[in-house]
Image 1 (cartoon, helix red, strand yellow):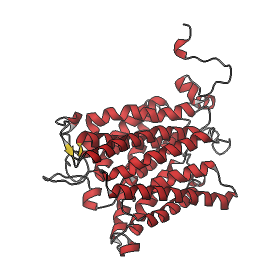
Image 2 (cartoon, helix red, strand yellow):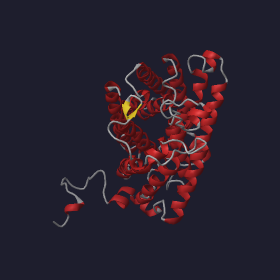
Image 3 (cartoon, one colour):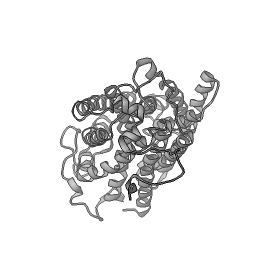
Length: 420
């Protein structure tokens, strides 16, 4: 085990965890004032549920020896049994790798929440989180992140049999979450007043703060996926920076041409689009190729967010337009822009593009179908959507007995102390 690698992956794990509170601010600022607490709490609930399931069985399903066909890990690591401080994963302690990958699972689920802002029961969301991460994310993480090892260890089919490239989670995280967000938006239906009433972001400084925290944490997400303090981590770090910067410019360019103005919301959204797109590609592109990928992602995602009005699905905070489309752009452009003899542009190799398309399509289809089924079952049993009256009143007050902003008086206090 290498102490430098261990220190970097521990720091990266903390950075990736910070991305979820960052996402809570990003999403929280984008909703109306009467929904901000619920929006942020959906992210925090993912932080509460998923670590427990990850230790109990999630890590085993994702990273134990394959049961056959590259579809599912085994159950020998249930409860992290037989693991101790001296157990290694490559050059880092196994517990460090467990912690690092846990943060990916938390963030992926939290991303979905933006598609159903303002209208999902908190209890229904809690049940969804537990089921979805178990039957969708854990298996897909095995497909993408579990590589064959020594002593006959077998991993997932996308990473090994197919040979698709996904450095840090374009398929497992972003396409997965984007497809799930689309499915849930269809299950829950449109918000009351959608297309009719203004539903503008209530706090743009929150949005910019959240985007900044996401960008900061994303270095752990991407550069940490090198699993060492090495040159590959450095390349991923540089590529993440320039792709994100280029995507901001690409998004703002679309706004300037289309709307004659460049907005703060567009700048923040462009940053996230660039971060999403470079995620699968940051270890295999040159910095110049990353600039090209970033500006492409910024332009395409800026255009894609309008698809919901054309096709009639209410993806509240553009999870589809940013994460699904951005994940597809990054995953597929690897086939064109990957350095060496991998991509079409540098090596004239068509094979990798086909592999990338198969990986993206498989994860998209699996996530969408399973999510639609899970969401429908929850909605038909315990209920997933709040009533129209409660939605108009405000989901914060109805679901949490709280409001984010108190304008009635200057006094503070808590519902826990009333009557005392």
